[in-house]
Length: 303
Image (cartoon, rainbow, N blue to C red; front, side):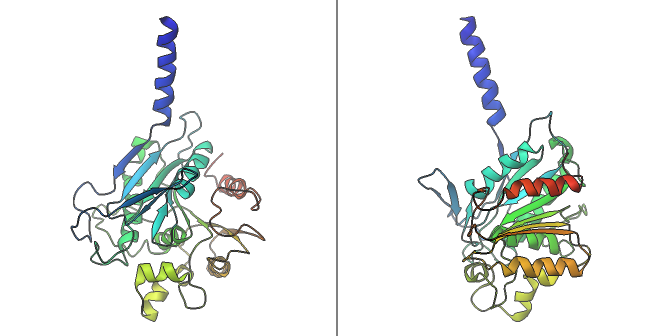
């Protein structure tokens, strides 16, 4: 009987450690939304990877590190998916687990997928969610053991576009911020990111889904992060593969040059092979997450 009680206690402790909290991004009415039945679709592939499409109700999943290694740094994760879906397991859960091992609190953002069907202005919907996530993490920092000066953002592919937009549009809030919470990420990490939406470098699907079929040149420039970099843009880490056939590696190169021109500390790793969407996989990308940890350590965000 005693052995059974001990076993149950161990199992309960393990469950508590693994259990995470998912909160609605907006406890009340979702801004910039059209009220419709929730159209979200959840799919699971043969490997068990979860994806969400047609998301109209955004959430934030909280994954905290063990207390004995927690260092106060936090990262908001924006999974990719061409603004058609979010690759939630591959570029969310697995990424969060890697940061937890570094002692970093991870917050997975399931942002709204842009759509005229449930948004008044789909151009700003994802950015509203990213800015709100930053605001929530900073507002509730004490509760989660987070240092408000160490709240970064990471994104992959179109999620990289969202992360870079948050990192370059923080002085152009698209949310209510009466408390004047700092919306500037402390740092950015961009994985094979969509950045330049011009005709020559764009990922067409991402541009069309976010901005529509025929965006103006002004709007294209506004949502191309490399044109929005200033000296106030957060320090940035970029990883990409030269053989990426989905998002041209030149997206990362022009972003790096813009950061360099504006005196923003930046580190970029371009690997010959890796393709697109490699996530945490380090088969051809030189353990990029280790290089990222080195960069974070050098900047004092991890020990």
